[in-house]
Image (cartoon, rainbow, N blue to C red; front, side):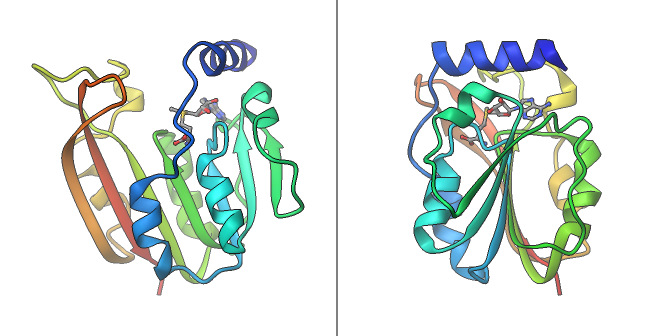
Amino acid sequence: MIEDKQRWNDRHVTRPMSKDASKTLVKYVKHANIDKALDIACGTGRNSHFLSSLGFDVDAVDISDFALTQIDNTPTINKIEADLDSYNITPNRYDLIVNMNYLNRRLTSQMKDALKSGGLIIFETFIVAHGEFQMPTTNLDYLLRKNELLHIFIGLDIIYYEEKIEVNRLGERVKVASIVAKKS
Ligand SMILES: C[S@@+](CC[C@H](N)C(=O)[O-])C[C@H]1O[C@@H](n2cnc3c(N)ncnc32)[C@H](O)[C@@H]1O
């Protein structure tokens, strides 16, 4: 949607995101075969850059053309400007799929189909929380429910699953769920 693109472009300018790769990705990437990776809603590319540095060939997808301009121009990162509300992921293509701080339930079964045998998914995003938490949104379309991520990927081999409280860059408490799972 054109409004989403404009809104995210504005947000990437006014509130730049971290340049450090996700700690969960850094810790668990060793379980993936280094070949073809997909970074879903890649933003300004902190995780794509990390994967490229390890030797992955990365498809980096985001709706924000501004965010994509912040990603290095290198042959190992294929920048794809697309709206994930309508984008379809090619089946049986990836050794690693990364989804950080983004939720689009339409894509979760496509993600499973898109993993090759032995492929790894690393997925982490915000979970519903009330009270003293400062969640980035109150829209339940964009917040996981308790154990939802585990339920979605339960058919895969679960390497790690956790729901935990984190403190974000603004010092606010948020709640996130993380999963690392492998397709047999
Ligand atoms: C919170 S940021 C996370 C960025 C990145 N995954 C990271 O962890 O640094 C969410 C990203 O989702 C992108 N996004 C939001 N809606 C989208 C859509 N419909 N299609 C594609 N990308 C979208 C935004 O542009 C933004 O880069």
